[in-house]
Length: 274
Image 1 (cartoon, helix red, strand yellow):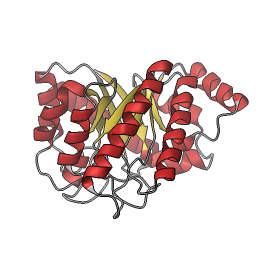
Image 2 (cartoon, helix red, strand yellow; image 1 turned 120 degrees about the vertical axis):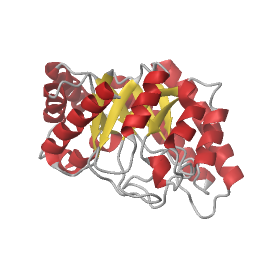
Image 3 (cartoon, one colour; image 1 turned 180 degrees about the vertical axis):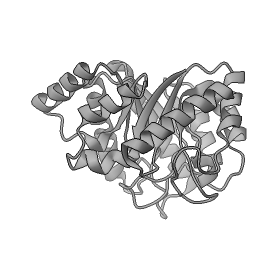
Image 4 (cartoon, rainbow, N blue to C red; image 1 turned 90 degrees about the vertical axis):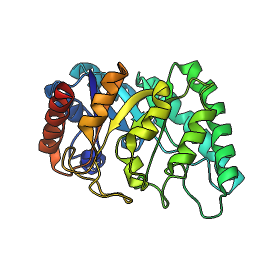
């Protein structure tokens, strides 16, 4: 099984320069991972000097950047803002390509109070389909997620309710867009059966965000393996389907590099035993 890691716990330290991207990639390499992931907010700009330095640092570590995560908001009630969000995503696709990433995680948008379900679904699908053609040109695979809420947003994800996530996923089947399935966010939505939802999109799943929550019905990040996500059951199911995509740890235990190490050890052991 191929494993990478997005350490949300280390985002503040990377953002303020306490930990460099190179040092983070080195940590992932030394833990025996097959790749590492980054949030788009950790990249300072897209100038040639900066991008070339990041690429050089990654090459020196010798570990491939697998996934970048970004947060398009295609459910915004303002048409002009939705257009801006599309242009932002085009830039992020170009950044992912410049850094030789394989995947770019995308979202539908926020659950703006003014946005109705039908409009939100239609807007998200329309913009995501347009983005797919651009991603195809750059050989970047976009991954739609059953998302919850990043710190960059005011509201929960519009597609956090499973029925909305499933409908958008259904309408994206004809595109090159895959699924990044988050193991915690179905529970965060209040739905008590992660496998029921996973089973409906498994043919589209390219990556699994191995994420943890401590509570049903709300965001409650915990160290992976210490909450309520049934990892053994999920991993056993994935093995039964001969899943050969990536396990991308979304580590959010807030225990520093040691927490990343513990998360990696737990996932490797649990996968092996499942």
